[in-house]
Length: 331
Ligand SMILES: Nc1ncnc2c1ncn2[C@@H]1O[C@H](COP(=O)(O)OP(=O)(O)O)[C@@H](O)[C@H]1O
Ligand SMILES: [Mg+2]
Image 1 (cartoon, rainbow, N blue to C red):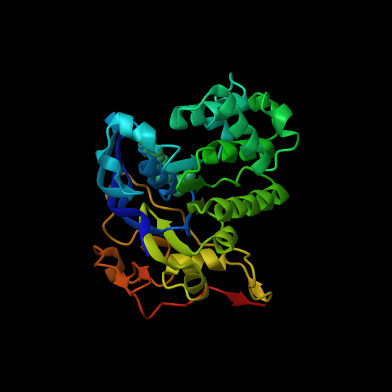
Image 2: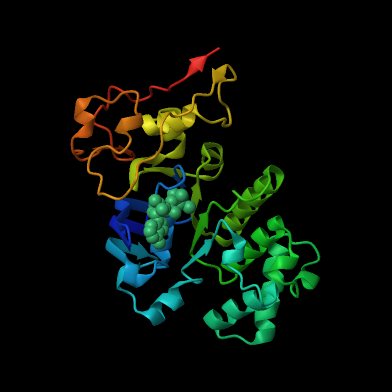
């Protein structure tokens, strides 16, 4: 099967007044056409930085990006400004955690959606507005015709999230990046938005990368999963395999710390002790070692290449010994 997104050896470093921040290191990602990849990890693990790299949304002067990114046959890191704006919205679009980032507060929501369609498809304002209406119906915004003329602040959080999905999907993007699109919403609205994304994905045949820190959400939406820690992918594979037989102690820790579908009801949750690493130096050893229940002295040495099979990858030198070791305390 062809990959619609291929990321190889992606490294993203930010130059700040306090020094370099090594936000993303040596990331490889593959997204097959029509599939959903979940990018799972705690806050600060590099998920959003990776997604923004796919759209080239980082400030160019403060950011060093190396490696390669292919999206729908385009070499993203080599594109000029004109080709970039052709790509954004059409080949790849993004739904952000905070919808106010996507909308300009001073323009009507319907006009902002119409504007994107006009830019990409060269159509008239009327045709753009028609598409905006169609998209707002598609995402089940009530009284869509009236809401076309609403300003972003006149909508509730859940409605704005839907409007942002309408905006992102207005030009039928080949790839949708959904960056924690449900985190700011309450539980019932979260489920509605997840179901909606799944429905739209089927309808438009989209491929999707879904960013989340929630194991249950990842299991719900994904075909494949990539687990990020300290700016690296520590484990990757088909979601059902990784979630039933996690290899990496960090994945095991995440599973042990969360409620997810079909879990053993006798399980007591155990949180992962400690905090994620600072990224002010390039971490070449296992970044999880300081929090890992299985760590030995060698875990603080530079990491060798990951353990890899046809379908799965994990970056831990204690494999295969520690695979499947769920940190669970049964009651
Ligand atoms: N523009 C930036 N300049 C400096 N550091 C940044 C910038 N953007 C993100 N970072 C840092 O990169 C790391 C990863 O951030 P991010 O990808 O946003 O994490 P998350 O997994 O929560 O989405 C964090 O330590 C964050 O502080
Ligand atoms: Mg983020």
